[in-house]
Each structure stands twice: as C-alpha cells, then as structure tokens.
Amino acid sequence: MLSRLVNHRRSCSDTPSVILITGATGAIGSALAKLYAAPGVTLHLQGRQVEALKNITQECRSMGAEVQAHSIDLLDTKLVSAWLQQIDEELPIGLFIANAGMNINIGLDSEGESAEEMTQLLDLNIKATLLMSGYLAKKMRKRGRGHIALISSLAGFYGLPIMPSYCASKAAVRAYGEGLRGWLSGSGVGVTVVMPGNIESAMCDAMLGPKPFLMKPEKAAVLIKRGIERSAARVSFPFPLNMGSWFLIVLPASVSQKILKLLKY
Ligand SMILES: NC(=O)c1ccc[n+]([C@@H]2O[C@H](COP(=O)([O-])OP(=O)(O)OC[C@H]3O[C@@H](n4cnc5c(N)ncnc54)[C@H](OP(=O)(O)O)[C@@H]3O)[C@@H](O)[C@H]2O)c1
Image (cartoon, rainbow, N blue to C red; front, side, top):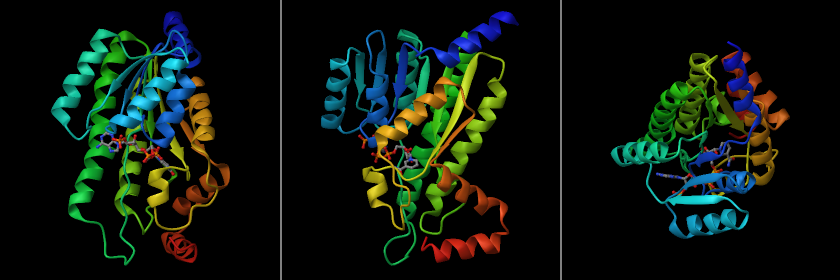
C-alpha cells in the first residue's frame, strides 16, 4: 500500500525520463517538446512533416535531450502498433502525451463534412489516440508507474454546429480518459484529460467561427505540463471559455443552441 502511494507520488511529481509526444510537429506538440527537453530526458517525437520534425528534433537536442524522431502516419494502425511496441520495449515510456489530431468543418457554405474527411478524423482523433493509450496503459499498469495525457478540447463538452465530428471526437477522448483514469486509479499510473480552448496553430487558423481568448501554444504547454505534474484528472483552460462551455451542457439544450447561434458558431 505504502509503496503504491510512493510510486504514485513519484509519478505525479518527477519529470519522467522517457516521453512520447505525438503531433510534435504542430503548435502545441512542439511547445510541449521544448518544455520537456532537458538533459537526462529521452524524447520520442512523432509527426509526418519531415522538415518540421527535423527542426523540433534539433531544437530539443540543443537543449540537452536525447531525441528520437518518428516520421510516421498514425492512420497506419498496423505500423503504429509495431512501432509503439518496439520503442516501449527498448526503453519503457514514462509519459505519453496523445496530442496528434486534426479538425474539419462543415465548409464556408455550410454544405457539410465529407465522408472521407470524417473517416480520417475519427481514425486519427479517436482510433489512433485510444488504441495507443490503451496499449501503453496496460504496459504502465504492469510496471506500476507512468502517466498518460490525452489532448481533448473544450469543444468536447458540447457539439458545435460548425464542426460536429471534431466535437464528437474530442468528447470521445475526454470520456475515454476519464474511464482510463478510474480504471488505473491506485495502480501508480496517472491519467490527465486536457481540454484547451483556442490555441494559435494551423488547425485553429483553419477553424471557422469566432476564436475568443486565443492563447499562445507556449502558455498552453506550461498549463498542460503543470497539470500533468500534479496528476490532475482534468486540465481545462482558459477559465472563461471553460465555464461557458460547461454551461452549454447544463443549460436546457434549446437555450444552448440559441446561444451558439447568437455567437455565430
Ligand atoms: N489549437 C487549438 O485551438 C486546439 C484547441 C483544443 C485542442 N486542440 C488539440 O490539440 C492537439 C494539437 O493541435 P495543434 O493546435 O497543435 O494543431 P496543429 O499545429 O495543426 O498540429 C496537429 C498535429 O497533429 C499531427 N497529425 C495530424 N494528422 C496526423 C496523422 N495522420 N498522423 C500523425 N500525426 C498527425 C500533425 O503532424 P504532421 O502534420 O506533421 O503529421 C501535427 O503535429 C490536437 O489534438 C487538437 O485537436 C487544439
């Protein structure tokens, strides 16, 4: 019992020495990579864009981290499962940040989402995220230590008319992370669900609708790292948008729909 508590404490406060970050070529992922880059830390950074991956790898190496760059497509399920097994067997992963994700919307003329894009989004945001987290959760549970951070979104609280599939995918990630945390409680493995608001990035730029309380990725990364360090169940920010999103769930649905229309979502 005591050793479990000690293990749990350790997993909450220490910076793990082996960290896997998916989507490390993007705004939030690269900001996180730089924040964790330090001597004694091995970073596994994943992203498809070779040049961007090379740049973030070099930057993190210059900060003293050991970096392994992985330019793979997370939509290739077979490849991903073999890759994950291999890197975790070589050096057990202490922190997994499931950050890679994509967004789609209903289009400028509100024509609706394409089936092809919906499939890609569901495969990446849900299938890849859940399968990777589920695999590492079992491995970490056996080891009695580790941490998984799942990047959901405030959009995972209530379905926005301009991007219904994205919201659904982020709601799925939130629910999965909550379930995972309950299952792993007492095992020494922590799980944090991260729900950011609008963060400056290519994905956010391409999003339709208003983007209130836009935040820099570097600031978001600091909040995420702090939440992971204290093993928070949920890290959601910024506060006003968090509260507004939460109200959308608790208000009668007809009122929430009217509010979204007024706000031009
Ligand atoms: N920005 C926001 O306002 C915001 C708000 C809430 C939550 N989030 C979430 O935060 C996470 C990071 O987003 P971001 O804002 O940093 O966006 P971003 O800059 O567009 O980064 C997205 C990342 O996902 C990777 N990715 C996309 N498709 C992939 C695929 N098929 N296989 C492997 N990697 C893939 C991209 O890498 P490559 O292109 O190199 O493959 C990139 O590194 C996402 O999960 C997003 O949903 C963002």
